[in-house]
Image (tube, rainbow, N blue to C red; front, side, top):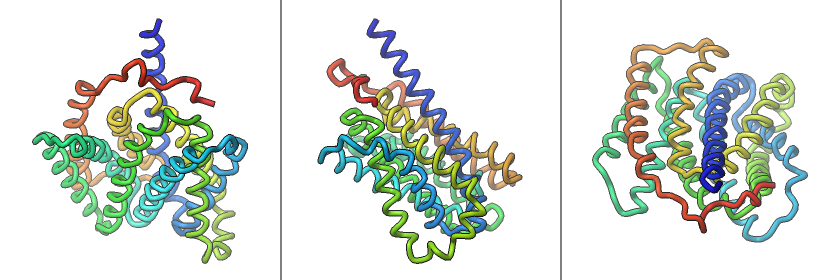
Length: 301
């Protein structure tokens, strides 16, 4: 019976992360559309204010530990979204999706560093993926600065995934998600405040995209990720999120009409090779949760 339950929980975790990969694949295109009229800070502020309002009913039952750990996760996640939004001003949506797929390399690298070990195949994967990112950045003359911002977003996201693995099982998912969302909303509003009034007309023009980003791309996505890590590990999350480039390319073609050039194809192939090298290892080397370490379903609201 316990085995059936564990298998069911693991399946739910996998499906939740696949759903997140699909959402992330669509948000790059949605952000590109919104950034035609909006500056990055306003887009982020409105997006997370919408998400924060949705999670207002779940902000109760707080304690010091939950607020502290939720705020740390929220600060990291703010960096993820802020860096990626700035980067998307100067880089295409499908290229951004392939760069986001690079977090599978960083999650594995961070774990190897923390465990005081290193392997040549991991170094090769990182070199291949980073080289591919640079090649994709040159396609069509996109400034390298856009890729560097996205690269920073990936590093912050990898740290967030690893830290969330440690924290997720200690708190109710809805309340922990609410704290994170409210931290991001507060920081985004502070960032956007100086020019917010001048963006009112642009906000109205992009309310549809902003609503999608707030409800699906922020509130639902953060909840799914926080819940999924009750059941699957950080490395498994990172590996599954490598599906994002596939969804990102599809949405970029469908919504924005973006296509790949020769350098993008070559760079994307190198990124995928790096991701595949990571995929070959994590599942065979994943540590198993002991029964005492198994997350409790009671942590879900």
